[in-house]
Amino acid sequence: MFEYLTGKITYLCPQYLVLEVQQVGYRLLVANPYRYQLNQTQTLYVEQIIRDNDQTLYGFYDLQEKELFQQLTSVAGIGPKSALAILADDDHTGLINAIVTNDVQFLTQFPGVGKKTAQQIILDLKDKIHRTDQQRVVTNLFAAPVAKNGTDPILADGLAALKALGYTDSAIKKIAPQLAQMELTDAGSYVKAGLKLLQ
Image (cartoon, rainbow, N blue to C red; front, top):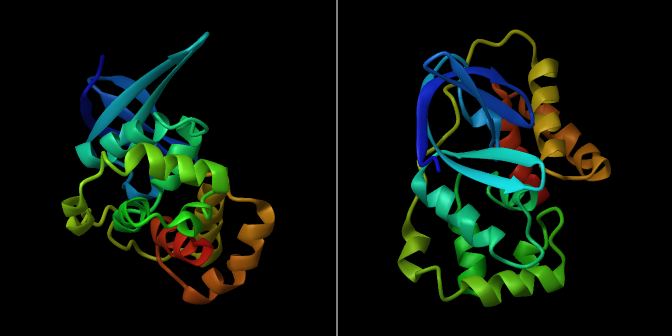
């Protein structure tokens, strides 16, 4: 029904963002809300999923990310939440390489993806993902650093976003000290660094 929406981001939290389009706020579930900037005008590609009594809008930075989401959710055992967790990193080259090279171990590092599901992802998507896609570099989606007004709240937002993606408390607790030492300036950077540590 919807292909994309253009508006101003009026709200960010670990699970979703709100995009205001002509005085209507759309609640969009996205892979990592903190890659976007509050009060910024943004175009997001969208996917509407209707299940029983639930209608949910999912937002994506570009068409490639939306297509990857659609491909992932076509795999048995991969729901929208798992697909968002897999797409949380702004660079999808690792994901594409893992599918093309049969790297089951890489795929099982994502929350909710076991060995059987990882093998199914490879089986279903290997022929759909072209090798040339491995060279495509996704634009850095993370907002420019903002003025520091305390590291702890920013780190807390980043950790909350990782938890919203499905990573366990124990896994997050394990990497939290390493993230705290980095003293990054925005939640998106903590999410990006956290994803690398978790993988």
